[in-house]
Image (cartoon, rainbow, N blue to C red; front, side):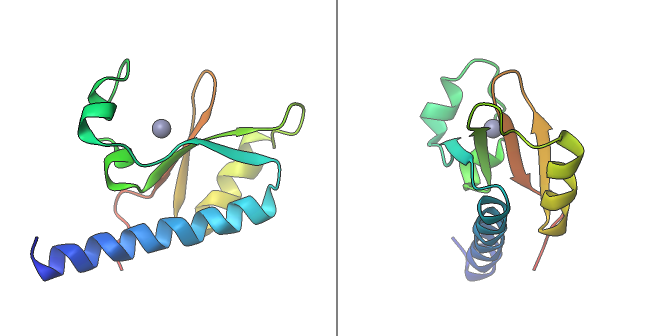
Length: 103
Ligand SMILES: [Zn+2]
């Protein structure tokens, strides 16, 4: 992998992890149920996206302790502050680094 590509990936990854730290501090009842995935693991999931950010480890699926899930708009606003987008799924919430975010 060329150095520029590696550097960009590392900056995006670091930014995501920093953002997740902010969110886990702000929402302490949050748990991660899925984070980085191998290509084979990702492919084996129902409805998986071949371009999923889980492959770059810049996406995580989270759940909240029963009865503690924040209002969707509250979570979206907090995540936006750290460059993370929120997608509500049936049984979890998908968080990923804003696609266009570059260092
Ligand atoms: Zn996900």
